Amino acid sequence: MALIEWSSNLSVGVSEMDDQHKKLIKMINDLHEAMKTGKGKEITAKIVADLINYTHTHFSAEEKYMAQFKYPDIDKQKAAHAAFVKKISDIQKSVNAGQLVTMDVMKFLNSWLTEHIIGMDKKYTSFFNGGGLK
Ligand SMILES: [Fe+2]
Ligand SMILES: [Fe+2]
Image (tube, rainbow, N blue to C red):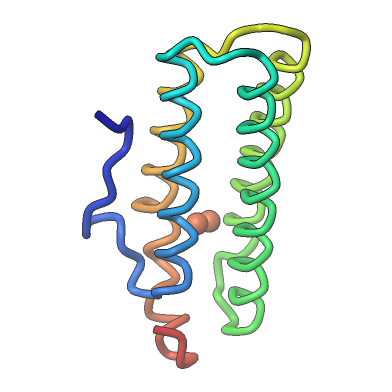
């Protein structure tokens, strides 16, 4: 069973952003699967690197639209994104140093993403929709 299941309560009402969130969820699920099945260090490091790259892509896209549609809480979002990038970079450092990904790490990734989408991302819906992005 996947660690995170997509459901409509995670929808931000903007299909491009929903698709990106689904992709992030898939990558976190892949990492969880690799952890559970005892995949090697190289595969794990590759999944973490891909997750970091795609996280950057996603955060850049959100921040671009927030600026474009004059979302008032853009600074809060940027700070939350930066804090997550720092945390995930620390995870990458320990993985590259040979440490295994733990269930605590997986729980952190799961709760950070779902809580961020529900608690923060969903607040930009009306601004993005109002700007014509649905
Ligand atoms: Fe997001
Ligand atoms: Fe966000």
